[in-house]
Length: 168
Image (cartoon, rainbow, N blue to C red; front, side, top):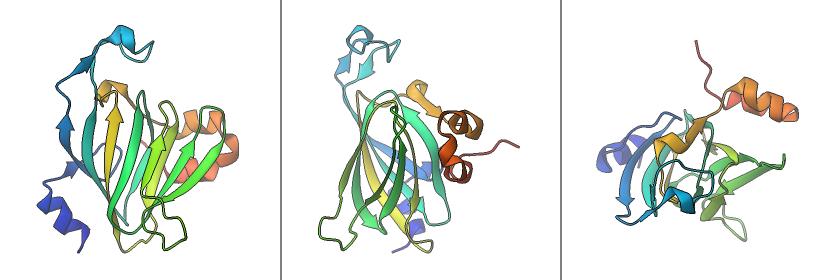
């Protein structure tokens, strides 16, 4: 199957970071903002979930959330996930069926860490699910600028320039 099949079948729409998505779940239960330390100014749903698809011709630009996010691999080629942690470390994780001894089908992105991703095979796609807790809200989403990240992580300048959206 091709990316176009899943985009239509799952009724996905463009995402600001790149790729396509559709929300599939939003908890009716909420957490008050005073239970979220300084991360939110308003209450948040306890959890949300989406389908997310990235084609081999695209990338998911560096961004971060104020909540933890769990990736679940579903279909296609493995997804290469790049993480720049708050402590300054870089992690590269291949999410999916890698035919390795220990494939990774779930990945946790800690709140506040910058992350970006790309499909490991240019002629394929990666279909994953993303669960966010406390639930996703676009006010908690920050898309990185290359300048900001390069100042913070200068030794990863080439990766950052390749995986950030450049304004025209």
